[in-house]
Length: 181
Image (tube, rainbow, N blue to C red; front, side, top):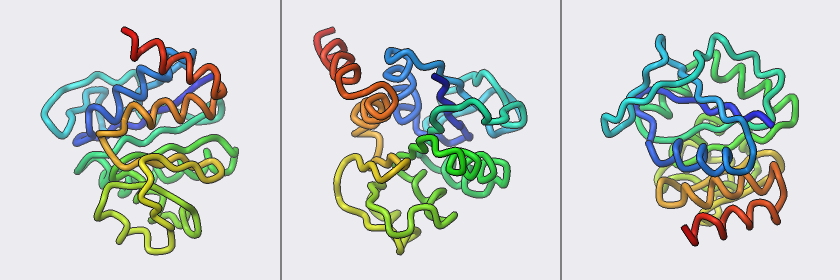
């Protein structure tokens, strides 16, 4: 099971690292992918992280999920990137899960992918997705789209992605495991 996570300078740390940790515990190979010109990416709060691959090296042919962390200006960089939009569209065409948290759902919203769907996003970003139904829930699943409000629900976001990929029982065991630690 392969999960591609896109990182742009200005990403929100917890929205990337927490879901990556949960998905790794679920048995996924999580590939951190830089959309920048180098493997080095810097979070919105100045934490530097080394991605494993560049976006130009990713075909997306064998991914089981695509994850877009939020944070600004990271989410805007994702939204402005034609190669990111191509990869998102490829994921949608293949029917794999596309997960976005905080500001990142607006990447999908600007592509028209969330029109008529129930979603969650960071408060204030609903204006960028007027055709979506922002429910107020912490995490929403609508077909292949998994969306979440923001950093404060990074754990729930990661667990929901895991649930969709490996089932509720396995995700529940991970939830128990990490809360006992």
